[in-house]
Amino acid sequence: GQNIDQPTEMTATEGAIVQINCTYQTSGFNGLFWYQQHAGEAPTFLSYNVLDGLEEKGRFSSFLSRSKGYSYLLLKELQMKDSASYLCAVRGAAGNKLTFGGGTRVLVKP
Amino acid sequence: GAVVSQHPSRVICKSGTSVKIECRSLDFQATTMFWYRQFPKQSLMLMATSNEGSKATYEQGVEKDKFLINHASLTLSTLTVTSAHPEDSSFYICSARSANQPQHFGDGTRLSIL
Image 1 (cartoon, rainbow over the protein chains, first blue to last red):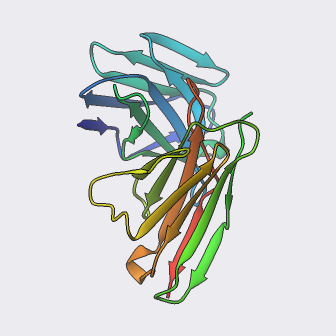
Image 2 (cartoon, rainbow over the protein chains, first blue to last red):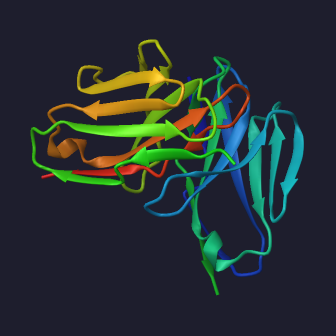
């Protein structure tokens, strides 16, 4: 089975940096994904890591350590519109389906 | 980028009604489509995985006779909630992917059963 943990809520100030951690225990691993979900809307894809290391995409970066079962999503230069839930999801060895963590609600304050 | 269209976006209907939700991949052929349910302030829970031309694979605890899935082509999957009851009220989201690509989500369907 899969077990994915991430903090429930985080608060940060506009312009600051926030790091959202995700730890996972899975029976197999075939990639880790981060999605952003605004309230009442469907998730949108942010990043994908399958090898160890850092992937950078503009203000968003994601890091993976497979040996530690650990990932983080880094949001830089926070904007008010970044207030949303951020979902960590792992694709298991079977290759197809994703298992989602509970999501981290990020609140950006002025 | 990849676009997944889901319709309708919102349904309000009486208890006992059956509701069909469509999910289409608009600019790619989806080898696999997924159906999720999300209750307020909770994460996405996978209901079933659907491959074109074959029977859907349901997750444990999901009644296949209540949630009928049809995946008739590489661009269309449908979920029918049969004889819906108030406890079926939820946000239903489909996603689609092609080989070696991330899942892309539809806009979701908010289902409210009175």
